[in-house]
Length: 227
Image 1 (tube, rainbow, N blue to C red):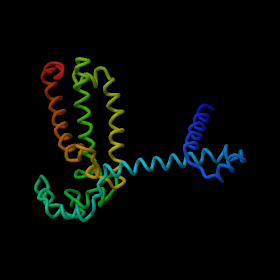
Image 2: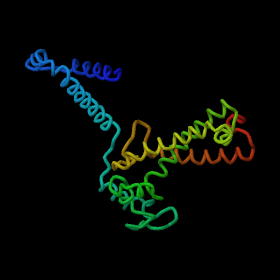
Image 3: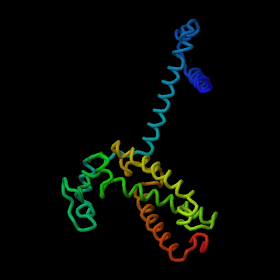
Image 4: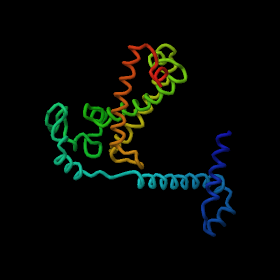
């Protein structure tokens, strides 16, 4: 009942904020049915229009369209796209490495298997974001609790609960744009570019691994002992 009252209040507020023509005003004043049924429906439509307007504004400010021609040109000119880190040349239809035009969500296969392939868009993006969050979490938690990452995860158990909860959320938020044909290169906000995110994520992954190895040798929290 409380939810219905709240929805009706929001709908009425949205209706009052919308300009109505004189004929529509006369119709609403003489028709109780409109007040009961049509008003919430109209308010939901107006709210949907406002949401679409906000999304269009965000897209205009942060989104860059990546065309197939641009990808093919980069594939031809960029030396790093002509062979993998292991020296193998990208081959169309191969398991690894694939040409850029085939592995990108904008122009390639958008299936889960393709996105999570070794050269897909998801693995490095998700691991890098989790590592960046992990480094920040480790620094704060170690200063507050005086426990190593291992102790926080497995001795107390609370850290493991947060970790298991966080991983699916970050993975889901990262996968949805890719399934819609949008890579991280298509979005930027100010200094937050895809290139900056990739390098910060790589450094965070190396840093988090170094943190775990160091704490396994000294048996003490790094951030609590040295910082």
